[in-house]
Image (tube, rainbow, N blue to C red; front, side, top):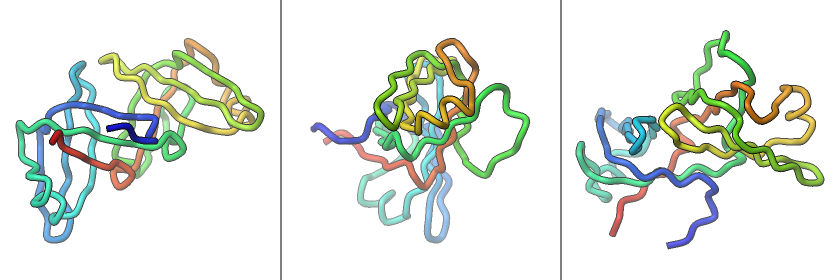
Length: 142
């Protein structure tokens, strides 16, 4: 299946914390990087989510916020994924910024060219992708 989300992360569920309305699901990717999603309990049931099961996390690139340099601020975003800028492609208004994490996962963010300049982003620079757990959509292989 093809999807419009730029970020597609395949992995295994390594933690699942049930709640009354929502559940927190941790997906560990092949290189060890982790993505956390918050989904409804209805989704846990309908998708058959369970520890050890394979799942796919989808995140649209415009939903990814960027932080340049070392993190010296605390954020409420559950996913704070540190790495280095590995690719930067500028368009007329926006740029696609790729950050390679320690485990090899690549996270794409679409931000304005002005933000790239303000953050001083360039290939090789330290950066972090901030993704709210509620912006992660989970799917399971059919």
